[in-house]
Length: 463
Image (cartoon, rainbow, N blue to C red; front, side, top):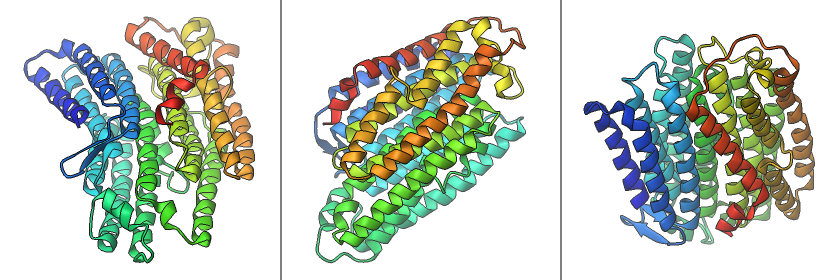
């Protein structure tokens, strides 16, 4: 709860800095503030507390994921300095929106009441709608904002309808009460229907097949920094919230009928396989790097959904996979922001010869793509290894075989970009070495490698 209050206060300070004309201090102040919030959040680790009649609950799960969200926000705020340098009067607005978005994300993994869960979703979603359409003079950005707003509104409506049905079945919004009553012998039919609607709405937020159709267009049309936020922070928040929702509301335990439980597992396996396969096959055809990473994100959503098959034991694996994926995403988007600045698009042709003109950034982008593909020594390899091991122990060997095949397919489109950097001749001059972009790229890929070398740093947090 202290973390949530501190984040909200930091967002208000960002807006005040604009009024006081302290624009140059906004980025360093916000980064220092977020580091303070991270320390405050970590001090609560291990404490099981609830606030305001169980509206907010602090647990190891919420604290660990909140720490990841704060770290990702620090990177995104750091990148904002160079990205918004041509719009100095708007930087405080955009950074404040990112901070309030973080508050929504922390509320989503700390909810103890379905009202707080929905409030967190709306704070997150409204911030994303604004950021997606933030380039007012760019037609693609306007289109991305409108598409995301319409589709997101439908998803929020479905979630809200599901919450209403659960309330009708249980007579409470309190998660602890709902969890306790869900284990009773006779459940009203509205409860499983409400849970299904809520899961469908969250699958949209995760961009899993068949609710993925908005992601490629919105990722391509949004400003590059917003795309970085959507594909890392927003996706990780959504998958963590979906996991907590299923775990906390005892969806699997309430399916005491073996046929119902088997049906749930089949649905999760089907969506997981579809997300991996559709994401990877469509990514093979893309020439726009942002669009390619959008389909890659759909594929990774499929991998992370595999943790839903072992909800009681896979929280640590989900945290590790989310950390590995998000850090690789931040590193790759740092390079994309540098290469595609002042360019009309983010096509692969912009990356031709990057290995010759800027070997360091080319190496960082290569490392992040290899991590996403699941190549050792990067943490992406170990994340898939632990995930596959756990899924095999749960008896889903066929799913793991499909996942391994999809990992091999993904190497195809990642290497398409890597080959363009090292085998093609440079087609443009690249001047300047923005310190913050370099620092963000180096630190994020270094953290990715450190997690690969010492996986227990994250895995043991939730065990």
